[in-house]
Length: 168
Image 1 (tube, helix red, strand yellow):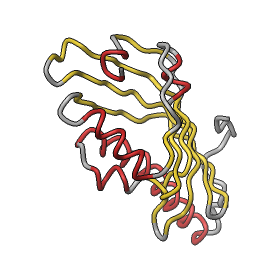
Image 2 (cartoon, one colour):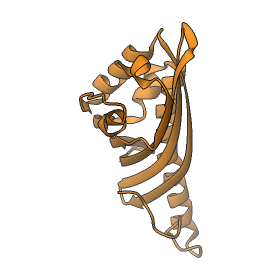
Image 3 (cartoon, rainbow, N blue to C red):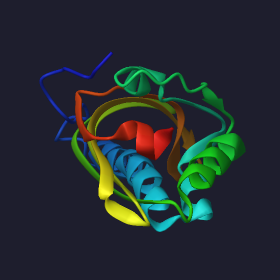
Image 4 (spheres, rainbow, N blue to C red):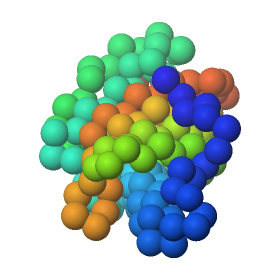
């Protein structure tokens, strides 16, 4: 499930073109997850949508199960963006921090694992919050010169605060 190999780059150091290509891919792959987080934080639908493939699926069920919630699997870029922004816009302020990225590239597909810390605060009362530390398991596909997420599984390592007040 998570990328645990003991090296980062697979292209040989002596092959400058292959190395440069892989490093570009790895930067674009990481950027897909960064666009996802920042798109939520800025409530920017275009930026958020740019992180997903048209047929993307986002599975927040493993994380939500930690506090007893049962959200549906979100399918399709437009549904994911509309659902997330509809749930947060005007109601919840968020900040996302991404760390511990591990990336494996295989031609035009890739996998990414990361830890994402997500702070959620009610806009009207920042005293009501939920801070989540979530392991992400992400499948990506090449989309021209960039990469987009096709499958995202979000688990939860721990949380503080009141997720029910934030997510329902």
